[in-house]
Image 1 (cartoon, rainbow, N blue to C red):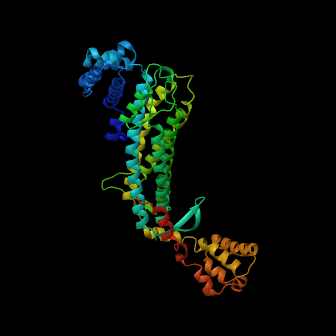
Image 2: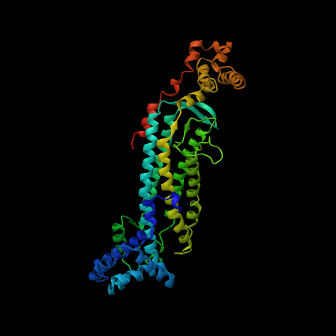
Length: 438
């Protein structure tokens, strides 16, 4: 992944030293379990730890790379270099195991580690959305459907909606993390022919994984498909919030705006430009994360007990999707925290249609006062269309209609245009959203 979109902690999870370290832990813990079963000498298990429990330096990784160039097999190259560190007792390494036991279990550990960082990122987004939701819980703004003014809402409710969505995403990621965190040490074709299931259970407990109930030499890839699909759903939520900001920043709307730093330039040609580049960037990154879903789903259908058609895909989508999503969530939290909000423009836009956004209140009031609903709809729509095409104010137009005055007094009509009507349940809604707290 490009360094431009890479944060070091996530990159380190997928870096070669971490991968090789996990491989070593799998082999060493397996030796401990085998020793407990008296399948190998206890001294051999101690020798593996004593000789191999060292950092994977550039020199060690270069040696493994050289061996892989000769063997064309990365796990054998790793085991050969480890044997050079351990000595004669290395003959008990990898006893009864197959390469997939190491590769799949390591991948599960790395995905679990990545999920820990992503959960922390989501928590930052949640905190940012909650802060802005409470800050602007009573900031009345126009709600839009089909891109057209609908009825008033509040800016705080917008942020609360995104908060609730990311809270759901957090739970989804916890489920996906649990789904993928499985250990498989069952040997060729998954029958435990040369291993006792205790070895798998022991290693799983040491690596904070569950043991795979049944593998076919590989961990079933429906688990991985679930994990990457969950990342894609989170990325789509990133895009939804980014898209809302982009729309609200359009010049014709300009209710909010990405922070524009002193000295920042918006265009090489037009000095006046202040573009929503961060949220546009997030939109693109979300598309990239979603692109991993189809390959992850296609990886489910492997041949018989094992093939490696999934391997090349996972080497790419594991690091790239988690690195990009980590970056995107971090950027999104920063965008929300630093977002510029323009209350005067919000108020101006709210009144742009000269009261039309209160049409439902008028409709329901006429029905309640005794007018047939279909007749009431026609009356209200007739006045609304006149306002759309003219300079009238909706309230004034309604006051001039005898059929309306027959059911509603001037005072009753004016009360229907009070904005407090649309904020009376805000506190209750926010309490429902934030009742669990973050």
